[in-house]
Image (cartoon, rainbow, N blue to C red; front, side, top):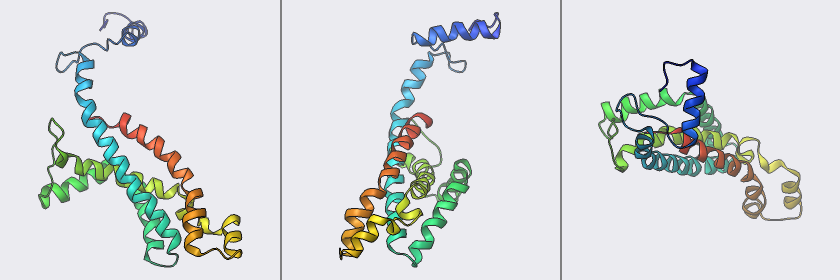
Amino acid sequence: MNLDRSAPVAYVLWLGRALQGDLGKSMKGKRPVVDVISEKIPNSLQLGVVSWILATVIGVPMGVLSAVKRGTIWDYFGPGFALFGQAIPNFWFAIISILIFAVWLGWLPSASKEGLDPSYFVLPAITLGSASAAGFFTHNPFGNAGNTGYGFIVMARAKGVDARQVIWKHALRNALIPPLTVSALMLTGFITGNVL
């Protein structure tokens, strides 16, 4: 690790080895770091993809329902969920979820284990997915700002196009552009930011 050298020199030497694929040895297990990381990649990928799917399946339809059902409970629930999901830190929501679903109710396991057992991914996926679903809702102009007031929507309604057709063919198609962009960024964040 070149601890006998100055910090900048040791860092440059480590960086040179890292660029060649040698990340050194783990201080805890005395094993190559590359081996330790490669063991965790399948679980991290699975958690990232499941969280991303959950966020997409919850956030995008919630934005659509909030816009289509103006003045109903959906119109109030969507922004409330988005505010709650983005205001509460993930680590705090994870601790509360473990306390409720694993400790008090005993429905789900609280600790991770090696392997790809789906029951161990439920709490982490819900924790990560719900906060990201709130992000999808926030970045969805259809649910957030009311895409139904845009000029092309008003023009289609003035031409006599059915309200359902306006929503599904005009508004939704244009409203999905920002969430799809955010979706790609969230997927990469899930995969690179979650290490189990």
